[in-house]
Image 1 (spheres, rainbow, N blue to C red):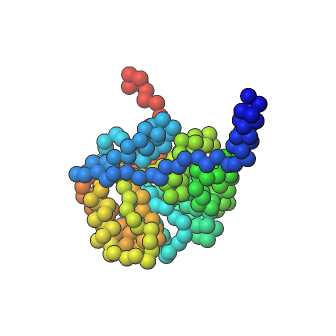
Image 2: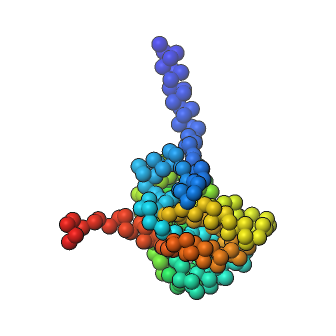
Image 3: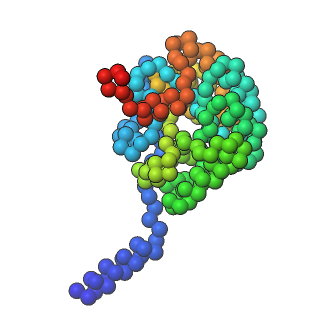
Length: 260
């Protein structure tokens, strides 16, 4: 009996000494066909239970344009020019490196009325850091954006590389952030792999569906050149570009009873 007690205590001490690595999910899905949303499997259930968005489930032909900005390749200013001319709202999820290296672009995003989202300060795997480190990553990015724009709190969070678990979503909720994933994306982050704007255009149009949250990377020249065609093509199919605030705030606002 004493041997078993000693063995149990030994195992408990080992478990305390060795960091416990949380499981991790990498956001992904099976692409839908014929203008249908993708199949996200258990990820949809996790977001329903713990909070977060990847789609507007209303069925309305709304589109939500989002960009991830980790570094600048010279295309974002032109993208902002086009969005301003076409009156298209967007959300830019930015990292600490981007904020520090491109302050004028951050200022313009805010000035033009776009949403700036938190993509973390150092782009870590959230599932491999502590809650305190997680909170610091987000707070540091918020403060960097605030110094440039006066916005004292970013509300939308996109985890680096789409890596998450139930715990990191709960941490974000406690800190006042809302996870935003995506329902339409393609491999577009290799800035040295050009396929032409038609390829980027066709990738989006082939996956287009009501309520899509589109993820694009601003380092892609193909994306930058395709954007005007995408905006036109999406609108020709009867879709309307909306802000994430239109989606999230609408769902958070209680519906009045009896129409009052």
